Image 1: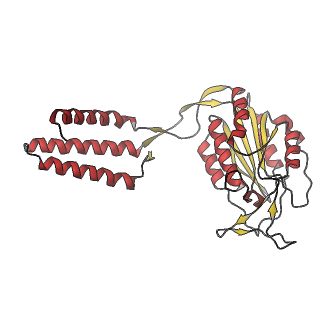
Image 2: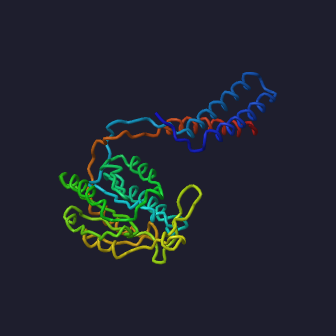
Length: 319
């Protein structure tokens, strides 16, 4: 059992206590019999407690819950080299800020799918194999941090290939599943390597897109808690990272998916609607723990108590 308060408890408790104290003082000062004062204080106490429980949003654990599932395995392959922290993401953030916003949007729009996550910089790492636990994938995205500037050794788009093939193979081994890939990068290659072909993965991918982040003019890259700028070792000036669409379009062509230069989540709307319309739904047992809201159990008695108080107010002409 967990709680997800609507209003923070540290704010809600003082507010409810103030209401309780003011009402109780008013009840005590009335020129009525003691039993009416006690009943009035009892009623407001019940209302305050019920309001607190509704706000607390107590969630009960449910195991093996039946959920509506899509026949989709959605794989995110995310470039996490230092250039993805260049400060030309759409809006006012970095490229990675935009990536995390878009990934959460995709997960929400394709809810009911299985999701997997690969990140890559100097090396590739599977942060989440395909899972129904959407929150764990979102949490995995939130753990992505800029690499240590001393660890960064240039960008290559080839290092993720083996992990991609591994997860795509695992998806294709399942019956009647569609495999969706979102390859996310700014397309830069700065380690002197040549982009390899991704064409052999084509038959393992049913749909998806290569999502490009950044701008043609480029931007500086900040790192560390002080926001220091990455330096170009050749010039000694602040390094500029630029979007390289040539590489990204090449990967998109190899995988036979769309290339999209990302300027907002709206760029994904048509593609996601197309993916959803091509998927099918099944009712299955989830392999993860789910949580069910219980606030509605307290809403009805709260409304009843408020109605009683309103009737008494109308009859008395005062609280």
